[in-house]
Image (cartoon, rainbow over all chains, first blue to last red; front, side, top):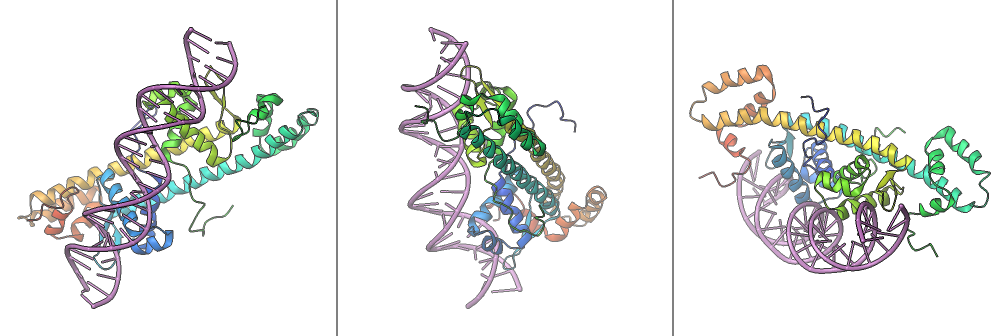
Length: 158
Length: 158
DNA sequence: CGCCATTACGGAAGACGTAAGGATA
DNA sequence: TATCCTTACGTCTTCCGTAATGGCG
């Protein structure tokens, strides 16, 4: 029960994509309808769900042969937990997106005004009022290192 | 901010594996040490991190050429959020594991006593007192279907 | 020169879609 | 017969590990 000090938790065997397909099928009550909703072929969804059932060693759906699928009780329990988990995933992505926007703005400032470091602290202060991230990026590197922060520019250095 | 009714959140572009490697590198402070810890080659971790930086459009680490890597501020922020997210993932897996244990016990009962359905309701009642899952599985299928619940036995039906 | 991250590359595994099979109402 | 899930299969992208390259102490 207590895994707090365990650096390696149990290896995660499932995939975000599998979980996404599972939730889509659970919401649609049918694999074919889920495939229409998320624009993925039925076999892909079926395979993902089967994989998930295999890795979890439990049956998620009851197949009604010409009438779609319904969640088992265990499946329904995991369905709720999985929806929450996928929400967490989107939240994480939103978090990254926000950081991206902010940091890019700041990096560009560093690049376009390397000769006027006097104005940087003030800009940092403005951004710092919203997000502290900006401050530390400027603290971390001088102007040369800020240029090095370009993501796709390994050949820009002449 | 409010995405409640949005059936399609923003598509999740990252992978649990990438996140795991990212956290391993962040905790180790070096890609090579992370590779030793999680038993994955350095290029794999490096590639995963690069991919993550590309999809997020932000720099996660500052590379110190012969001295490992350190998280940028944005990277540190995402590092914390990612650790929490991976904890959530392990929690989900534990959840599934618990459900699996309970249901398997019940399925085996159904398989080993197909000729004595009289005792099944009593056993179900016992299990039902602990978890309602058992009840529904038994209600859902007759004995033949219970045999069909074997995970890896599609050819067992003679 | 030693250390560490990255790139190159050949092989393996996984995911996808089309097409065919099976089973029920 | 119609519907829906599953299996089969060919293709393609992605991932991994070994080996080679680059860049600072």
